[in-house]
Length: 269
Length: 287
Image (cartoon, rainbow over all chains, first blue to last red; front, side):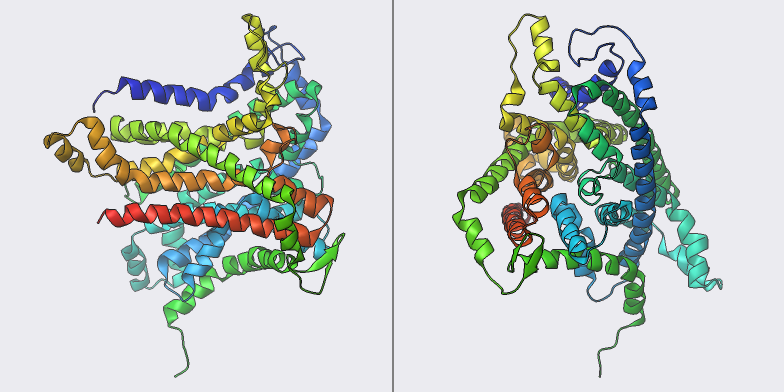
């Protein structure tokens, strides 16, 4: 490898720019001042205490967990169907169907949310956590399909054929051979969808009709300067939470590739 | 003979049907509804016949709609340009100067900020750039006057979006750089070209598909961003998504809002197609 000090310096500077705001989170979350500004005043845990005591925040967090858990389960299951079908079979209309499934990746989220909202309002369907789940599944499924497609692709087809030759049915082959081998991909898909859903704002805001959901709650609280420090404490917790989740997802993904005997090429996306 | 499907095609269709039905009912039908609403007449919260092009005519004649679309387009293109320019050297460094076994780690480090709460990151900028915020107070503590960046709404929107979507740009460029045949570079240098000229004439053209993919990946979500103009721009510089919200939700003007949404999608679509066509030039050239 050639040394490139300028490029390396630039890249480190770039990383600092990317992480800058996130690094400010813990600094001001522990700062003993109502005003989020320099100079720093001293250490305190007050903001974490205020965060923990906030009843509305708890309700919002609970709702977000319910949504994220449902969305990641449904998206991953829908993703398994689509990824398996697209990797294993050829069928008429495959390209347009897959295109439609992946469409939310290239469509501004606002358009997806508003299109769904217009239909729900026209049909007179009450907005609730359920409608948020329905909408977020649309956003998360393309990610699930992308992750699971690569999991199914690295699968050795001869293993399945061997199992079928040895007298297993298609269903038991899927359960005994395919599923264990793609399990890490399924876990990774679940975790990624969980993170996306937990973080998602547009659909939570417009299809949730003001129900307390974490991202919507945070968005609202930042408008009140007095609430900002405890929101920074919450942000610190959330950032830690998602780094742990992602580290775990990345570990699962790598284990999956190693298991199937493939070569690691690139990151999560 | 009637068209009969093979067993493989049947199995494939059966397998994909749950996902396909879901997206047809909940994505294709709603999008089609918006398309239909955009040519209907209507008032508050309802739509009715006859079919009309009035809504589109209004978009065309009222200057504010054109202004919003043009502004969103310019903001998104500026953000796209900045993000791609900033990301290219990073992708180049990871692809050419990092040991192969360390590459995933670097990419992981670059993508983590993207996965941490978007709403928290954007809100943080609100605190960082705002009046008496972190930037201004830091300047004050070393005796400099405040910049008050947040009062320049468009500038702060561009800064925040460029930061939020930065990691999106690195990955596609990295992938295309990885595909560049290293022996071509050696050939270029053996034939007497300098490293800089080799980069301009070999590496850069070969990595253009990644650059254009990166541009698309950044452009589409930024042009439709809702949170940043609302929070950081203080709602003073609404972009496409904010106007769609006002039309469809606050005014409940379904036909007009739908027409605006369709026109915006059309604009995003046209720009995306231009990007893709531009890409064709480079893909065609590398047989």
